[in-house]
Amino acid sequence: MSTGTLALIIAIAILAQIVAAVSIALWRRFGNRHDSRVTGSNIGDSQEQASAISPPRDRAAWEGFKPFRVAKRVQENAAGDILSFYLEPETPMTLAPFKPGQFLTLMFELPGQGHDAMRKVIRCYSLSDRPHPDHYRITVKRVPAPSGEPAVPPGLVSNHLHERVREGDILMVKPPSGHFHLIEEPALPLVLIAGGIGITPMLSILNTLLAQASGREIWLFYGVRNGREAIMHRTLLEMAQSHSRFHLHLCYSRADADDRAGVDYQHTGHVDVALLQQVLKLGRYQYYVCGPAVMMESIVPGLEALGIAVGDIHYEAFGPATLSRPKQVAEPALAEAADHWRVNFGRSGKSVEWNGTYDSLLSLAEAEGVDVVSGCRAGSCGSCQTRIEAGEVDYNQEPDADPEAGHCLLCISRPKSDLTLAV
Image (tube, rainbow, N blue to C red; front, side, top):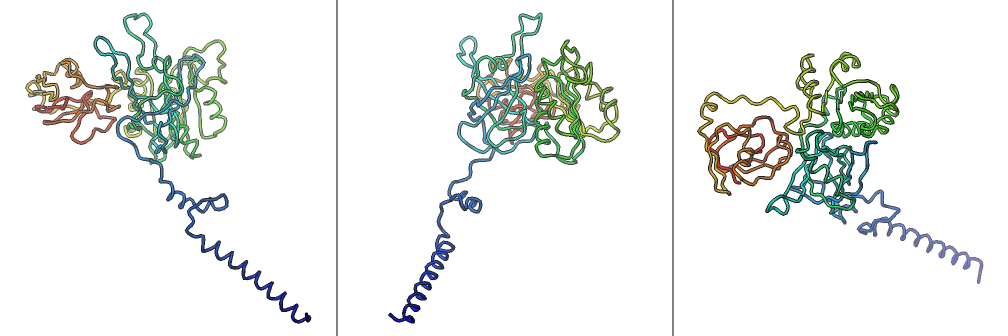
């Protein structure tokens, strides 16, 4: 074989290799364009393909109650009367973000009395953490029987949660709701004022802003009797050390011997307006208040007396014992005719006259033996929502839960005309 022939064969072989390499590259670049598999090498560029292959998980709020599994129970104070429950949807789904400060409504079936083997009980608990896509957290205080009042029973649901509900159990949960929540705009400095278990919605607001690395200044004034009762005490101290814009002011009214002033807490006594004036600089703030009735009844009017705009004061009412919004004033003509309104309960077939004796349609229904599911009795949980078949109602106060069109919340409403209800 001549040298020229050998050179030609080698050249053809090299050219063939080049053509093969180019063909493979072109096939990988264009021929595999419609391959729906997602591999480790292209996973970053194939999120849109992946979402097309697997339908996106539901992020919308659901209707009614949905089963959630208790994933974890955590004790949150030294006294042992505060537990956090981490709740995950039994059917996997991505939970839509809620507004920090809102609450969950839970339904329980508990042993009844008399002929009722079981009865439904509704309770609302504030979400105590920032939004997560896979779980909610609520933090519940165990409510004992009042001291010196043996006839008054302990908290029904709080004791049930502490004593009987374990990890793996199922709870029935409605989507987050409530009008008490963080206001994004205007982005004013925040003053969070909490007493006892009222810290829970504040934790949701605080954790959200710190996770976002928000530039807003935050003051937390938190009042308890002593360090044993303080909720997530160590966590709060660590947050204050790690975030320069978060200013923690713990107030102990009855400090224990081992509670260190200036270390474990900053102030002796209760949270009051005088303390706020002492600590806060001049300026405009958004105030959020949640706690025992005695604190609410002092702080909220006290802030208003200082000239703080009503729109800058937000507070949570857990039930009828806490501070409520001002009642609406009935029109004179309606007040005069109020004794003549007739209330018909359609399903139960009862018809009674409204005479102003009861504080709400719920109280009237209960007095007449009409079966109505209820919970908070303060217009928050929405469990007593009832369809209006005819007539109109007035509200004693602004509802926290938004009733559906053509419905009303019995716990805070009264008739405005002759009325027929679908219960």
